[in-house]
Length: 398
Image (cartoon, rainbow, N blue to C red; front, side, top):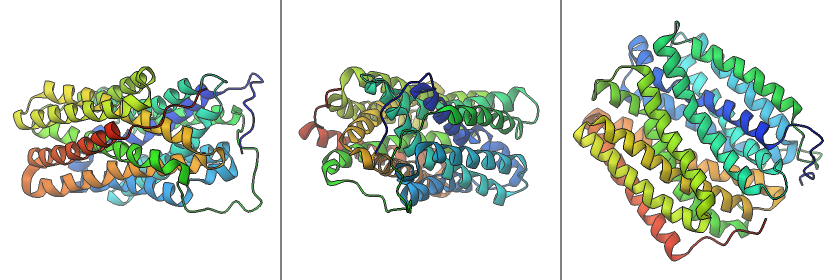
């Protein structure tokens, strides 16, 4: 169970969202740097996607095995653990001397993101003031996507215009993690009941949530597949096909898809989950069409337009699904249910991207990206059509 929302002049929902954003920023810091690692270590585009997928595998493992741990041990201990894993990941990149430490750093980053996804989202929601639950839902999803977007923008700018491009981004993030640890220390705990044997339990979606969970999670899968394409492959496409080698530009392009996601999440509050989920799927399809057109025509403006449009659709569908699932989940299973939702989403960010990496061996980046766009369009159209026929339940009154 969760404790009543007490103010007592202690940091609340906004502080928890800041911790969430800082933690997630570390997971995308390496995105603009993959080209530098490729030249330094001499690995292929397929290996880039494998390195990226190692992160996603870490997220999925934590969500599957320990996604409900914050329901049993409390939000703050899990947040502290996530921050420690983020710091360990940064240290792996700082002392990186080959592929093994690179993979270890991404795996640790995935472990951290898996812990943050359920625990930080639940903390932001539970620390909201009465009557501001909808704003807290936006704060949680915006912190997630905003943090993911700030990571490549920060590292791209530092790598392009500051010394030590493979070290300085991670030193800066370590400083931000210290700040996040201080905020976490000041946060009130929202989990009151601590079982005597806080063992891990298999994730379970309660029966009363399943009708909402299925379409929301599939839509999240499709949207996160787009995010995975941009965070793993877009910088290589920008450099190799479009001839843009400025790392700050690459970071900004990746950031644009997350900026679009944040915009979509803001619009969800106006539309409501029932309308936002099918609308998000439609806008996501439009964005994927633009991305496919940019790949076919090798035009940077189309790629940016596709990133913003697709990100907006992803944000609409993601927040609508997260809000609906969070509202339907019983309090005692909320952290675990949200973690299950993120697990499906991170399957979307990993499996299709590895497929793209494999296809590049035979089709090249452009051909692989076109196949990817077609497959994700099919998924988005299917789930959008489903929720038009069977809308999500109306929101509960605040």
